[in-house]
Amino acid sequence: MVADLIRGVLDPNLAHDCDFTTLTRCNGSYVTDDLREREDDIIWKVTYGERTLILYLLIEFQSQPDSAMPVRVMSYMALLWQDLIRTKVINPAVQIPAIIPIVLYNGKQPWMVPKDIKGYYLLI
Image 1 (cartoon, rainbow, N blue to C red):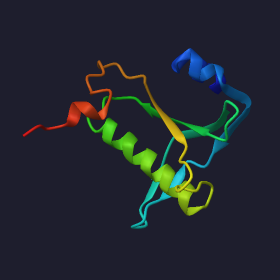
Image 2: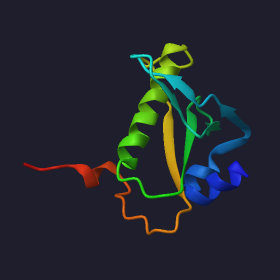
Image 3: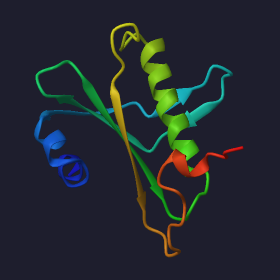
Image 4: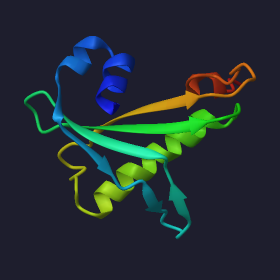
């Protein structure tokens, strides 16, 4: 089911190079540097192409619009990278893995939240 989601959401060329036989669910619970607990809904990793690049798919389920969603997703991504570095899964001096965030919205109100962080810049 997750492989079908990746194929349906990602650019077909990107999805084509994913090895779905390596699809693995990952830990979605992190502790920040100031010891606050954070939890993500679901995180998966998949090998991409012939490289050792790991593609993490971060899925966030939402039942109502959240104007802070782009900022929340960015913080989830940073916490994931931080945890991968802390646990020595990755070496930031070599390469950090790509993360594709997906927000699945199933609410009744229209989603009027900017789809990316660009909608939040205040130019002075």
